[in-house]
Image 1 (cartoon, rainbow, N blue to C red):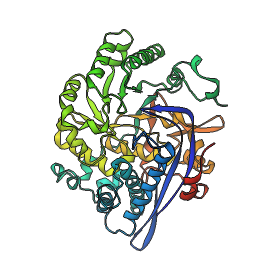
Image 2: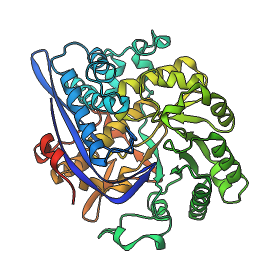
Image 3: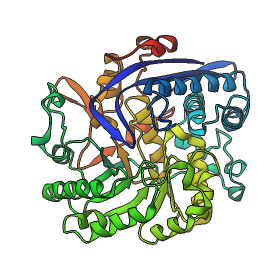
Image 4: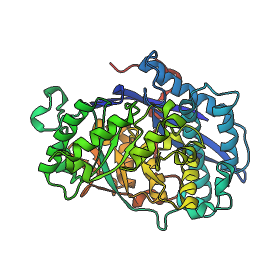
Length: 466
């Protein structure tokens, strides 16, 4: 097991919840497994985003990033030397890292490292057998049994969780962060690069043909109302047909009644009504420590009578979604940084309940090549039709990876990337991404990973972007 990485600087600051992201380390994992006397290698990657996995106001951004890298190191210890199928190995590592002797006490932080190593292991297993991720699930290569995590799903085969066929296109649900300029004349000069990459919301709509949007709200009803109605005007003027919206609270609303009043006010406003008419769900409005508190159940159910409510940050353990459904929530986010086997178990719960419970795909600034493509592969296999995507907006395309890796990714995945000017960027057509090339042998990528051009973990911990 080995780790490497590089620091990535955002081209546009990304405001979400209490944090503004300007740079973060992109961490890669590499694992070797032995199958039939032959050694196979798998990779995975994630951006170590501060102030999402833990929202401790007393820690610095650098402290948060170091905690995530330390989580990866602990997970490597838990996985190393294990034998058997992938899922039982993951179970033992998860228990040690999140519930046992290697736990730090913050479940999402502890789970970050487990999920990173888990994906590299899945990749290696798929490559050893020449299977795609979907084929590995259908053929029970990984030994996954959802009943081991959620007993009510016992007996459901992993193949029953795979979309038939996996999706080959997904609608991009464009993130609108708290600091994002909405119109071209609002863009500060320092955010204009030497390319023609969109910066303002109206530019993104024109460039990509967007029709779906994820909007961050900040927990201040009046400020949120003013910004949401401005966003609605920009989207309305740009002209997408029947736009879809989701609102992300990022744990910023302690009072759900206030959020309900905000929705009522939007619905009574000529501009705001565009949002409420296309509103699909609300994501994680309450702080995580209140989300599953029985004292909030009445408020959750009252809000859910108007619009489905989804958990995200509160989905920190294997039973979290089940508990959320019991008190009125309807959905749960899929993010590879929370774990693939956990996402599959939640999918199994939706299948056996058959009551309208659902999963959503939410980005946590997934960057090319590995984080983005493996996350897209997961949502494709789960059959999700739209996904929040934000890495291509806040970071400079494949400029975040070594040039050789970017060129290899373009050659291997021409449906997902394209050359534009001097760079390689995500290829979005009519608001959609094409995913067909992700379903070859391995877990989501065919590009050659330029491992040796990354920094070691020790050096990554010391590096700071100027």
